[in-house]
Amino acid sequence: MHRAVHAKTIEIEYRAMFSKQKYGELARFLRAHAKDLGRNDQRIWFFITPKKLVKVTHNITQRTAKVTLKLTRIGRGSHFEEIEFPIAEKVVGSAVKFFDALGLACYHEPKILRHNYLYKDVEVALKYSKTWGYHLELEVVVGSLKDKVRAEKKIRSVADELGVKLMTDKELRDFTGHIERTYMNPKHGSFIY
Image (cartoon, helix red, strand yellow):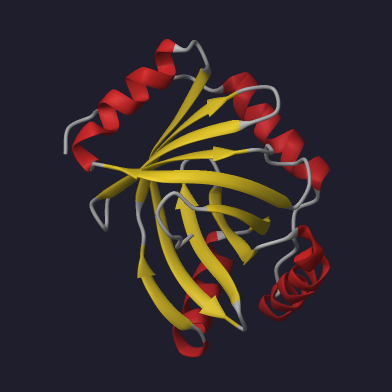
């Protein structure tokens, strides 16, 4: 979630989906007990390959942008090696056109409402989007896969404390597969800032 320029990292990441009521409960709990890392609303364009994912992210809140290559797709394990670099906010449209010209399937999430917290050394992103509904991501960034088991233990402990059920790989594959089969592309949304 927060990384150095041109960073190559491994995210250990899990997701959970829940009701609007649970979202409100989690927001109250995290405001009271976690370190508030702030709002982080985004627009994201996802470009899909069979085994990898490219994202162009426009951070609406911070007025920044980046391109990220995830070397593993959602639902194929809890670890995601990433390579990312910042781009100027004013070139988001050009970046989207660049990846679109490669002929990759594109899915645009026009607005993701997101608030980041740090709780017991786990980054918790409390989110809402039209595609995913109310959900959160729990993440620990590691430098090596040898730290994966320890990171997963932390994440599972926090999820248990928050009272959320982590999605399985199959649930994630089924959900994202449904999105890919039924998505209606709004021609990548507006590039107006």
